View 1 (cartoon, rainbow, N blue to C red):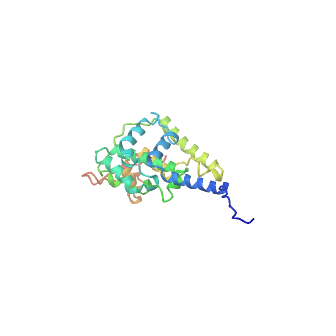
View 2: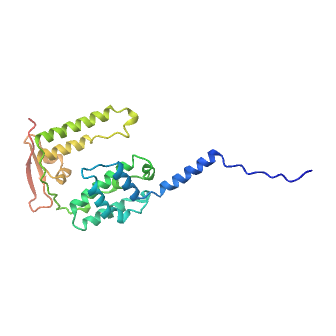
Length: 237
């Protein structure tokens, strides 16, 4: 007898199931939020002396209420700038600068690691933000910390050690390694420490205002009534 033949459906192959699982995983990654990123960074990416208590407090106050539920892939420079403006509008200029530094550190950590790296393919939003226009031009951060000669020597040695350790890494491991500060940044730090200049004065410095023979640096004071002043440089000897 001839009759209709039932064709049994084949169970999905391993390859198809694997593809489906990867698609589900990728879709889930796309939903990761700023709160998820902050939680991961506080757990594995940063270790402050207070156990990250101050970071957690700051994020709970200024980051999570505004962007906590926002997808990481959707965060823009405008979002970051709005966060900083909110703190600046409270008159907390020092906190705003510190908060931006924390955000920069968090996103820098994220863009080097999966799954966060895949969510930042367009770029790190903090890299596009310059907070200088957000901070009043006449703001001067208070400083009372004094580095001892031993601490200055330790700082110098650490710079050298970080550079040596990074240069010693095999080529394939440099991307994940801890990068030393750029030489330009190190020099800027030593100029600041050696002359006690303000960071804004250093950023506005021009060679035409430097006289190495006289060991003087002509500083333009923009925010004060006095148009200028002289600042002695440290002797090369």
